[in-house]
Image (tube, rainbow, N blue to C red):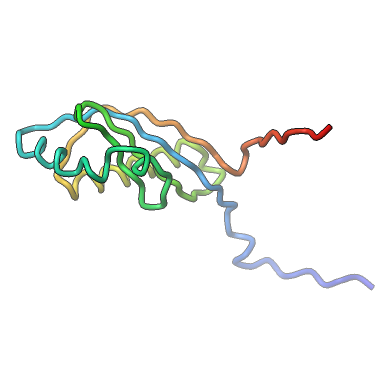
Amino acid sequence: MSSPTAPPGPQDERHEQHTYRVTLRGVWAPVDEAERETLRAGLAEADGLGAMRFTPGGSLAYDRTLKAFSFRIELRSDAEDGEEMAAALAEERLENVLRERGLHCGELRAAVTDLDTMKVNRKRRG
């Protein structure tokens, strides 16, 4: 006896989702002293290891020199769109974070890791 197959439906239209960790690195481009003050005021939460976490909302890390920063975010995106889309989504989120704080930055560099395709090397016992 054969088992019935489900009719094609919405579940067939879903795309496979992957989890990406994206690190964006950039330099600050403050336009005035008020923006520099905003950066200094945010140092308590942005400086140190606690700020360098991958979170769904993203975490912004920089130090007292106010020259460079990194933004780390973990997000889900369609696997078929790949790492380029994950980087674009991360940049969009960073732009929103910076706009909310009234900050500006220069060019960005992105490093993207697809956690679903990572190869994990396990130690052999022996």
